[in-house]
Structures are given as C-alpha cells and as structure tokens.
Amino acid sequence: MAATVLIVEDQVLIAWHLSDLVEGAGHRVLAIARDPAAAMEAAARQRPDFAFMDIRLHGGSSGLEAARMLFECWGVRSIYVSANLDPATRAQAEQWQPLGFIGKPFLPAEVITALERAVQAL
Amino acid sequence: MSEAPETILNVNDNEASRYATSRILHRAGFKVLEAGTGNEALQIVREDMPPLVIMDINLPDVSGVEVCRRIKTDPATASTMVLQMSATNIAVVDRVNSLAAGADSFLVEPVEPEELEAVSRALLRLHRSESALRRALAERELLLKEVNHRVKNSLQLVLSMLSLQGHRFKEPETRELFAKAIARVTAIAAIHERLYQDADPLTVEMHTYLTGLCAELVRASGMEENAQASLQIEVEQMRLPTEHGVAVALVVNELVMNALKHAQPATGPAQIEVRLLRHGTGQVRLTVADNGDAPDQSSSEVAGLGTQLIRMLARQLNGTVSIERAAGTYAVHVTFPLQSAVSWRPPY
Image 1 (cartoon, chains in turn blue, brown):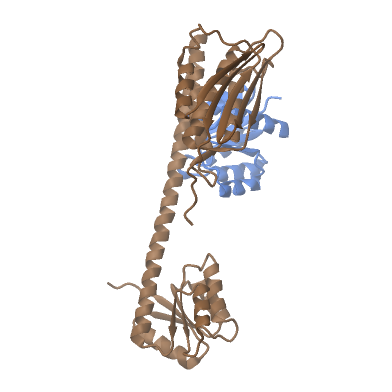
Image 2: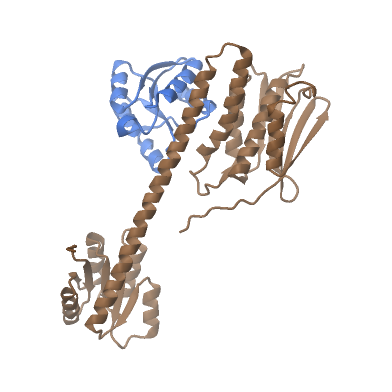
C-alpha cells in the first residue's frame, strides 16, 4: 500500500533527500513544509498518513509544536528525524504517539525501516 | 556601587538571641529574614532562596543539623550557604556532625559582631563565586550541545548532497564510484549519531554502530530485495576509542562492499558474515567472510583504493591482516590489540 507522507524539514537538501527515499520506496510525498504553520496548511489541504518531523525548524520554531498540532487536529503521527533527540525531547514527543525516532546524520536504511514500520502501523 | 543588599535568613527560636543577631546583620547592611522553627526555615529557603542561612543548632521542631541536611540534599536549595550557631556548651561531636551534614561553617556563641559579619561576608563571597562557576558550566554545556547539533546537521547535509548528486548520474561506473564514496563518508559520519548521547562520549559501542552500517550497505546494494545476498552480523558488546571505531567501520565497509560485489556463488544467494569478537588476551578479531570465490588477485579492484585503505587502517589499529581461503569460502581477518579506552567520566 502506498502511503502519503508530509515532510517537515527546514533544510531543503535534507528534505529533498528524504523525499527521494520515500518515493524510492514507492510512497508519495504530499508536501515539504519548513515550519509548523506550513505543516498545518499542507495537512489541511490534504491529510497525510504520517509525517517525517525535524525538531528545529525555520525561524526558531519547533517540530514538537508542529507534531502536537498535527496529532491533536487530525491524529497525524510523526517519525522524528533530528540531530537533537535527547531524553527530554523524546519524553515530550511521547505524548503524541511517535512512530519512530531517527538521529541525524541518518542512514537511509534507518529511514526505510521506520517508513515501512509506520506503514504497517496504519 | 548601589547593589541590592544580600539576604540572610536568621533562624533561632530564642527571640532575644534572634533579635541580637538580626541587629548585627542589619547594621552590616544585609536584608534579614527570620524564622523561629526548622520547618519555617525550610519553607523560606525554598520560597525566597536566600544565599546564606544563619541557624541555631537547637530548634523546637527539627534539629538545626537535620534542617541543614535537608537544605543541602535538595538540588533546588543545595547551593544555599549554611552557618550553624550554638551555645558554648556544645560537644565537639555535635559540631563535627553539623559540618558533616553539610554546614559551611560553625560559630560558638557569644560571637563578636565583627566576626559574625566577616564570616557572613566570606560565605556570601563563596556563594557568589560558586554561582558564577555554575552559570559558566551551564553555558559551556549549552555551547557543546549546540556545536554537536551543528556537526551532526552539517554531516547530514554532506550526505544528503552526495546522495542527491549520485542519483543524477546515468553511467553505471560513475554511479558505482559515487556509491562507494557515499558509503565511505557514511561510515565516518554515522559514528557521530552514536557518540555524545551516552555517558561516555570518547568511545563508541560497536554493536549498534556496525549493525546499522551493514544494514545500510545491504540496502544501498539493492541485493536484499532480490534475495541475492544475506548478511549476518556477530558483534560482541564492546566499546572502542572513537578513532579505532571509525577505522574498524571503514574496514568493514570496504570488505562488505567487496563481498557484495564478488560473492555471487553459482549455488544460491551470497552469504556474508561480519564478526567482531574478542580473540585471545587483549586482542580483537574482525572477520568478514563470504561463500563466494576469492577475488581475482590480478584484477584492478584488488589493487584499488579499497585494498590500500584496508592496509592503512589495519596499521592504524596496530593490527595484522590475514586471508583465509578454502573451497567456497573466503575470509579476511584483521586482528588488533583492544586498546583500553581513556574512559571519560563526568567530573561530578
């Protein structure tokens, strides 16, 4: 089953790389958003099955905030992809039923594994 | 200099003594808070956070020694300075107990006003320099975290850039060369995701590191999908110093890439094994074995960068390379001394 994915990441190169991996695995990227507002707009237009979520976003905004809103408004869960996954961040993310955590720099295999696991959980 | 006066909490159930002490402190220019019981004192310490508490050892509810112990063991109030006071007839053992419970100084009454003021100023000075140190340490930690974040993010950008570039080549040779470069950079970059986050940032736990890298190599080769190759990993739990960890990972990278390329036995899929095990006393042996034919010695691949890298990295590990050939198996071993890492412990 092809899943629909929202990528929330402010670094264009990394977003593009993730997008390549998602599409290479046969799934569809609905949008790339660089901050919580853009993520909400994109999800309002078309509901994703789940999101890849960076933690530090554009202009000092937080991926945790974006993840919370996506989850509370539409029950959209996130796979967190960040260079900053300390225990406090993970604990906070736990509230919104995370689908996985991937540290940066990531191995593409980790992204694919988390992606397949998320698709199974749908 | 018109700084706000520093606050001292004066704890004594004897009203006359409390008044006398407060008067001395007021005259010396301090702001004084007062408490008549231990519980009252604890509440004020928590709420007003005075830098110094001057406390009689005999209190009606909780002993002064116990109040001091509670102040010093609660992380929120531990930085508070405590000066214990007592009457002349106190036993030496009680003074010792009081200091052992964390009191910063002890005075026996009656005390000359000059001495009380001087000791108070000394303790407040100590409190100020401790606070400054704590702030500096917190700033350092924040800075280190920020630098780590940037290093990891930059490495991610390098990998993403290479990967995007790699997809745009059409010629298979160029694609393969690029894939090799990406795999080598990945092996180096991936260690950073695994450092810093645990208690010992100068060593790396090899099991998770190598397992992740091998999974990525198999994925990147595309051999898993068509069940052309299977990879088995046996890595003992061990920590290596970071530079040795990277060297081992790069050797594994070269050998597994070779094996994925060459190990194509006529019968069934290629089976590749990666082992990192303790070997004899103080030695570690890395083995990458497959069930394919040994690579042709004369081929340019063997004399290529990969082989040179393996030799150089083995030397860096103070190790030796040996090759084992038998019918239907080909194994490369790198044996090296397990260097006991200079282990890092937090300084507190």
